[in-house]
Image (cartoon, rainbow, N blue to C red; front, side, top):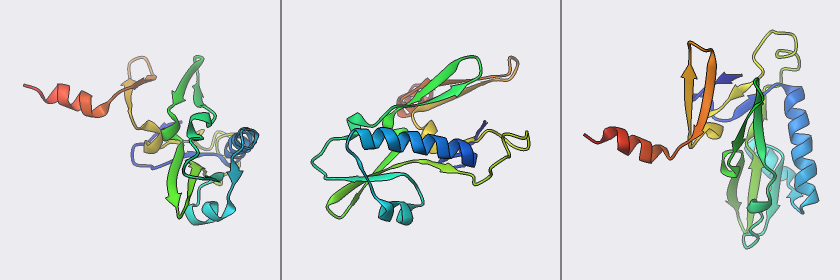
Length: 152
């Protein structure tokens, strides 16, 4: 997977995205969210769900983890994959992951398994260990980290 701070949302090959969005939709429907095609058409994101502003359903949004080689999982905070906004009197939340539209690139070795976008990286420190060929993720309050580095 390419880790790219210049790409807004994570981009997955079409089949991987389809499996993720299908499962996400299944779980969201089970807990009572109602899908809204109008928001999907306006935003280009999906699946999207509408709910009344007084309903605090975001605490019930399913979790999303990114599984990497070496049995490593990076669990994303809800705000890093479920984009919420207000649309008139209804709140809308959308899965903030997109499809590359490329069916076979990752499967045939012709491309990466996806691109990890900066929306999903927010609040995370990404550490590159070039000698060992590893990447690490740690939750950080980036403002606090910047302040600690800027003291002097």
